[in-house]
Length: 66
Image 1: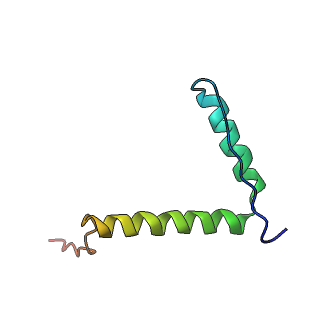
Image 2: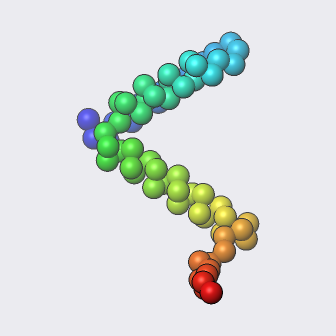
């Protein structure tokens, strides 16, 4: 099943937070641990790139304790 990607789309006539949450949990349950971590790292990298592009990422600061 590697290489096959399925698209899941939730269509609701109105906002329903409970159904949205159940949909997301069901989707996450279908993924392997490796796939979940890969998705997490991809999103993290996208956020990091956006922060750098818009100048909001600061280098790590060293805090000295007195």
